[in-house]
Picture: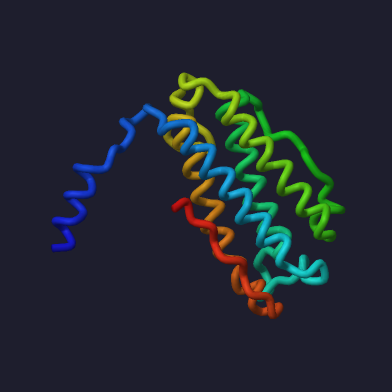
Length: 175
């Protein structure tokens, strides 16, 4: 029964062909929702717990957020802006230690990605490229993978919040 449901879903759901971008409005909606979700987590964590790490050897809370947004901005810069590296949008001495600075840095990186997507043509979104020594993929696919990475990494900070007696914000779903 479960196998039949998957087959039905795969035959009925419209999926973009390899290289064909999903509608830009859908890509933008996902990134804007991601921005809202990550900022909610930043805003929920007390300023005093930004450098909290649940165990030695793992990123602290602020470093986890930096990892999310740093990956996102790098993907947008490399795939849509044609840059050799991501722009520097904040000062680590500030945003890794002060909540307002972390919030502003996070917002700026999402704004950069969203602006890059808004400014991208359909051809730019479909352009095949290889980054991070991985096989070539369309730019839109790199963006989707980066957004997926954001959600996974954001999920990793739930214990950081709970161990600091903070209820994690609810995750904003698209429907």
